[in-house]
Amino acid sequence: MSGSDVKAVFITADTQALDADGISAAAAVGEDANLTIGGALASGGSCTFDSGRVVTILSAGDDSGISFTVTGTDVSGDSQTESITGANAGTATGAKYFKTVTAIAAVGDPAGNVSAGIEKAAGDVIFAGRCRMDGLSIVCSGTAGTLSFTTSSPAGTSQLKIGSVASATSTRDVTIPDEGLLYASGLYVQYTVSTFGTMTVFHA
Image 1 (cartoon, helix red, strand yellow):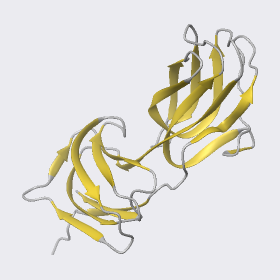
Image 2: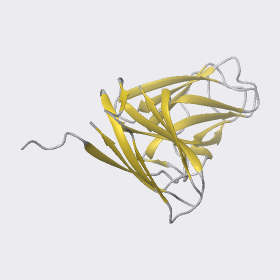
Image 3: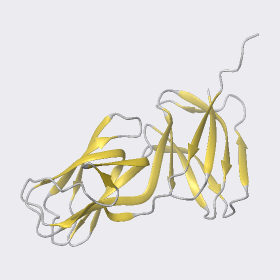
Image 4: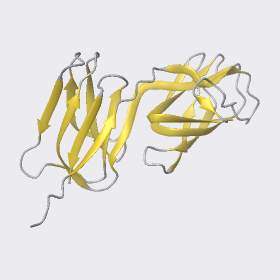
């Protein structure tokens, strides 16, 4: 007798809060120079996060005419870079999810101090290839939120959204009928940190 081809993936939610200078503390940065990766979230000159995180760049001056290149890895462990256009005395937010950050380089001459950190959004990979999602079980946390199940990457197109409730003792069990929901370019999840506790996703 053959067994089921359904697999279960267990994910623990990221609880690291937004940290505007967790990657690199505010400091002057020279023209075309690297930021110092030495913030509270860094170790040994790089950052490794529990889940994929979106990088933010906070500029004290007008950096809208330059950019910053972030280098690291994505949620699947593959090399990844992103160019983030600077802000005018404010915060510029990237779009990609980084599991690690190994370097951030200014492309141009920053007008004032620059710091780098992470946004409150988190993302993870469930299965990197073509698959069908059959169901999931969520253990909620004390904060309600929405989990978005996307394809291609955590920042990809959402094909299913599930809400969690603000109760650490509640669970949500979802079964997807028929053959499940097709994710042609991989199955990923995107959420705001601490809006669930743990989650098991079933796919085939």
